[in-house]
Amino acid sequence: MEYFGLTDKGRVRPTNQDIYQIEAREDNQTVLLVVCDGMGGANAGNVASRFAAQTFIEVIRDALGGPLDARARQELLTRALDEANQTVFSLAGRQPEFRGMGTTLVAALVQGSEATVINVGDSRAYLFDGARLHQLTEDHSYVEEMRRQGRITAEVARTHPQKNLITRAVGVEPSVEGDLFEARLGGHEVLLLCSDGLTGMAEDEQIAQTLKTAKTLALAGDALLTLALEGGGRDNITVALFTRGAEEEA
Image 1: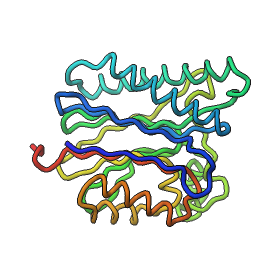
Image 2: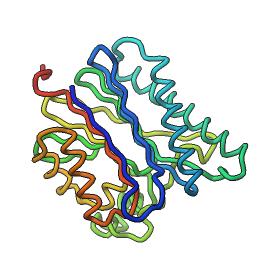
Image 3: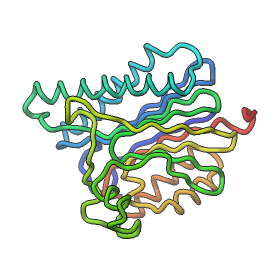
Image 4: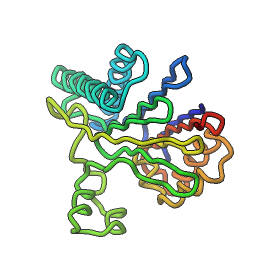
């Protein structure tokens, strides 16, 4: 089992409102990965992403016992998201300087070869199979909705001036609904969670090639950061990576 994460403020933004956390259980079979991208001004964005990630992980940590089936994992992730949303929304309501703040959230709970993913906003989860990159999540954004409706093409969506306008975020409303996805991880496959600071600066094919050539997840993470910076680095950049490793493949 191998995992790695990093975050960087990029070349343009004065502060980093992204955050990631990775927690592995001692049984070497369970890992939780979370990436959040805050919004609402420098201080507010930092607060939203930090408290959302912290609350989300604490709920999972306190409730997680042994192995769960897919339905139980989904219920646990949904409850953790609900409590993270309540925490951020409550903070925003109590302090004027935090009013309107929110954050994206993408998280994966991996147990053995099974992964359950939840997302809100436009931070993404991908599965890399050794050759191709498969996007697991769907962005909650204005531009992505237009693309799904066939009003614009994927090529137009990538450079659309409103592509950063998200339609769903943690902490903005009293409640929020996350989308859930299931994935099965072979020993050679890599799970990637990232903020749009990576996907906005690099094509999926470039990300796939970077993962294909890197010998370790740490080298992959560093290379993905370099890729995003060379693409312009116009946003905060965060990646969290996980693989079971070939020796653990059933």
